[in-house]
Length: 288
Image (cartoon, rainbow, N blue to C red; front, side, top):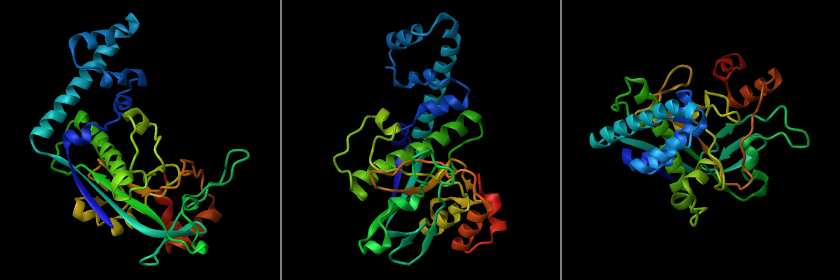
């Protein structure tokens, strides 16, 4: 089951986490709160006055930056630009550190954590899918979101806003997946702050996350999601173009969590390469 959704800039922009936009400009997280302030003069002035006097110039800079970003978003929306999201839901089970797709029998190998915290098990993303030996099918999702190449990203501000829109599109698409397309959380009602804090059931680790450090996984996802039809191509190193794109997996199990695989030892790399059907030497360049 595959769903492809086209969002207007206005729709996607409502799910931007501005904390990371301001972080990219070197602003501490407290300045990103301008995004949640009512737009009237009085509310903005109260926000500014809440900062110590020595920080107000910096706060004014943050306010101007946010206003410029909003202007760019309005221009893109008026120009009719959009974002794209695709999710494919598939029956699957885990078999050790692999996820096996029921329909095709294809195996998607994952890596297991090498250095867990004391008293906790070594985790692998495959752990959050029902084992094959159970005889009961489970399900996983794979997704991609992107900002089409027609959207102008010549300036740094535009590039950073496009990056945030790609993440916002994934956030909105994941929400619709949980509520409607997968439908395992139809009654979920969370605030934006709760969404950004991932208070929902399940997780959507993207390629490049600490639990999914192998950039070559993008090639697997491209085959399963047909990246070219979304306007996405991959470099020889697995980077997505347009740069304002992201992809990864969705898991529904309530215990799914983020973790870091950590440094991959040579023995694990060779086992993983064997399961991928790729030489260990060729995989080295893909690890972040």
